Length: 119
Image (cartoon, rainbow, N blue to C red; front, side):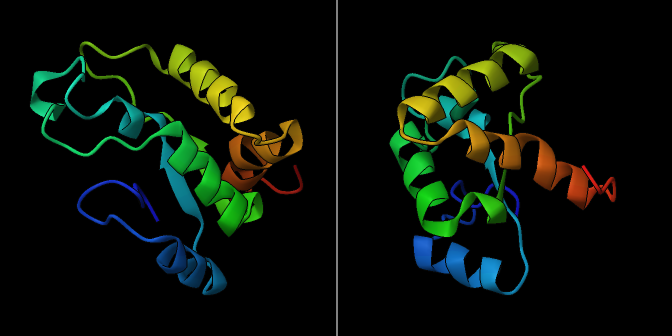
């Protein structure tokens, strides 16, 4: 489920859990944290920002095994994707997401979705 917490979906935790129970993998994108009134991108300033606390809570509630992380970066005025992923991981770690959970969401689940198992 792409951009689950971002518009136009704005999924609740219960919605994400129900989708995960049906087999969906929930995507969390760093880009969503760059939206809002202080966005470096003028067109994104009116959109809802997803905070790192919201991401961490969703991952804890839904389970890392049901999520993957990405940046969705590459636009002008945003960090380069590698730097964005590095910051996303650092911020999630500060929010209580473990190294093991990061590995599941950044490597294991994407590999599984691409049919690259066993990873």
